Length: 217
Image 1 (cartoon, helix red, strand yellow):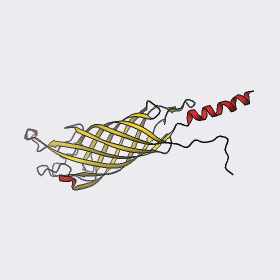
Image 2 (spheres, rainbow, N blue to C red):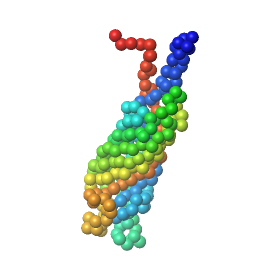
Image 3 (cartoon, rainbow, N blue to C red):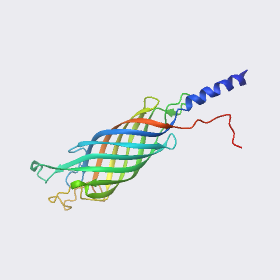
């Protein structure tokens, strides 16, 4: 009788666990800032940031994210901030590897799987900036965030990303040049940008169901 009950319950458990999706698409919005020769502190002269991402999930902990963002940066024209601010537009493209601290998802029969998890990420990116985006520079994106899966296919995500550029001319202002060495604790004296982003995420590409009664020959 026990064996018979187990046989009938097995398909029910399999169906409950089968709703897993390998891909995600999301829209992001938030604020961004610049740190360099013209501005030495984070979240100074913040401007809008928005974009989208595509994510492939290897499992419940590891994933790969492809992202494109458009944002503005700003800072004082000279040491006398009353002289006004310069502004520039940027387009960022990056790919990052992500690690979830908890096994992320919704599983009725596995308490190890959590609908909320913090995560960290790092990767490589390319930024376009300057007049008509004619200047390009590589950067190292890294950061941390949190994910909340509030429905079968839907998530909310919050991430704080830092972009360490392999360049020191994002401000593009002659008055600053590179003579003031004002990049603070940045030992490379490179420019840095950052974004605090909120994302609405939709999951798709459902994983193929595994048949517990099928065997490979």
